[in-house]
Length: 315
Image (cartoon, rainbow, N blue to C red; front, side, top):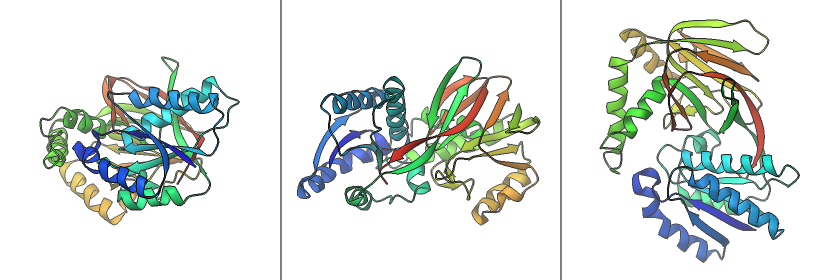
């Protein structure tokens, strides 16, 4: 088996760069055949993935795996690169993706029960002998006729606003204080966030309207936001997506919501709405921040179709 490792040394506030020398020593000690490439800018992993797949096809290599080494954003770009490549080369056999979690959030790893310690995660990769087909999220922008994919979640509103503010915090790049950038951003959004209009159309159902939406997250795994168990029953092994809509809560409702999350009973609250569907439609008005797998989408309106597609993972 040969491994192509797409490595983001900037992941985890510099943690990836710190542990990478130890990872290389581990691979050398195990006599692992691998080639590492390094991301240098946003979306670079998409291009690197397509280049790797092109070389694999040109040289007719077999028994290969692409490892995304970094955080959820690195995995997201690696998946996107694979999907874009196979859209252009639909007859080629898909090369499986694996994930080495050395970033900060690592929600995909939690959702798929991949160890968060890199030594154990890497050992599992090297001892795996066959891929597992999982379902990943796929969205279509019905206004712009574009599409994309997500391994974790697609969020509009609260979580996306937090990502936007935290990414612009001077604390984020600091390995020790980075986590406080999210705490500060959360408090800021809670105080200043205004609810927005959203229409939800589940598969084979009529329109559901929410006038004061606070959080709108579509997820393929149980976790978001670095370990928050937003949908305990969500699974990438089935072909459904889970959507959670939270109406703008009062202070006591917010406290109740947070408390119930720890008990995994928050989806029973009346101001929280949960959908489990093969296909969902979302429409909003007014510009709102969005995020995919922790990566910003900017501020815009949304008119989306969401569903799942399959891809092989080496897990």
